[in-house]
Length: 429
Image (tube, rainbow, N blue to C red; front, side, top):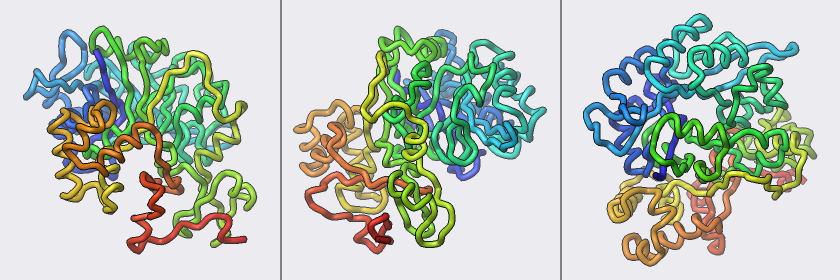
């Protein structure tokens, strides 16, 4: 059975999250996307946990959950959350985000009882805890050996294990004697498997990809995901596939091009400065406009820690596929600013209605069939994304990257509509 899972999202009690982010809407759009397993997110928040108890029912066979009002739904839920730990290591303050997976609402309640000692769980769906990373893992694993903890968005500049501002250089420094319980790392939008493969010390960890979505819209939820081939869908089967890094079960991850992520290149958003690692290093990581420190991008941070050349592939590495959300592809092909416009939705809905869900459109649908539904230009755009024949202007300092699908047209549609041009090193030479 093919399982496409997005295990890291947020509910409506997290900051900067859609207030319409409820279980029913998440399930509805997960089905449209093609996800059949979604993390609940935020089980640490009392109000969200109460909603989970009221709206979900546990499936006896899989151990996973379904929407109580639709027990035959094809969308399953896993009980998950993200937490932020703040602690001091060797005189430096560390701020690290972690994802927690747990087999049931009952075990989630037990985890909450322990974590409540370290912070206010009601303050945010992703609580901030005054405890170290090893303490977190120890508390969670003492509740149940079936729990899993892994570092969230491992490379983003803030709040990540390898973050440029408050992270570590090694997994072992972060989790210390609890590293034995860490089996996976989340790549995040601004990195992908090839970037992580450049560090030999990460070979023993399984690379997972999730959206960290704050809304149910299909250009957010499921933009990154994990594809499994399992005998049956169950909590245990999914965790075993991650823990064992078994390529027969864990087939590949769905990744956006890392340049699409908001922190891929080094830069300064306020000054519209975007720099490659080499350019940033030449400037001493100082903004050439305001002379303040630049936000170091993920690509530069990977370069600092890498001990392998670009293109290295470890033995038995789990595969990956670069995709972009279908709505983004349509919007870019049409030259419109937002994937939420009615023009985009009309084409999106026709494609999903014809092929069943978004992933089928992106991965499997034949070009001629796409052409018949959406026209030649949209069909060509989807195929180019599928085959990796596009470019992306890198994101930086909180600014998403910009897909360039029809490079031969030499038109940057978004910049042509009055948006400020990004500056690079050549603009200051």
